Length: 220
Picture 1: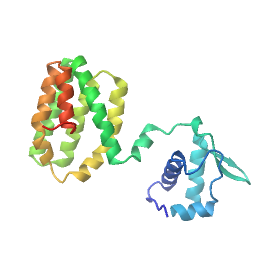
Picture 2: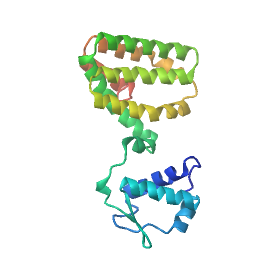
Picture 3: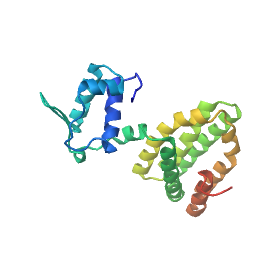
Picture 4: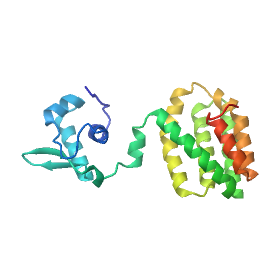
């Protein structure tokens, strides 16, 4: 039974159904189970099921035929919002996307960074080290993310920067969950400082190699 969280029940049901459809559990033009079955499957009331159906029908994913049932609409007619997709992504998938983005972003930042970008990166890196030394985990994770966002903005590719911000937002809560303290941020300060130096030196090759070390693609 696919029991779900009790926050925003209708949205949770809609998200789960959207996932099931995207994974092929329900095909185009296939009729969904009746309300009673969906209520039992998701462990929610009738009103939540009906509201979820309405949300998905409004997005174009479902077609409601009164007296007949609810059917899967042409999936190609809509696209799942990226933020919604990232929300249900696994930590492994999110981290892999982050690693790939960071490689290209840092390389571009080494070519396109400005003096203002350098100031921003230095400040966030300093905050990262200060909060790590003080044992302030949440503040340290935020400073780390802001440091990498500053690099993304320095790349001058707005799409890459927006993608990185979206991924980082969803990774933050995972970082807070998997890291018991700030030791990892203290241990990796030196290589992050080297990354910043490479960007300042406008050396895209060394920058790419340093990010590869940070993200675990090579040993360091």
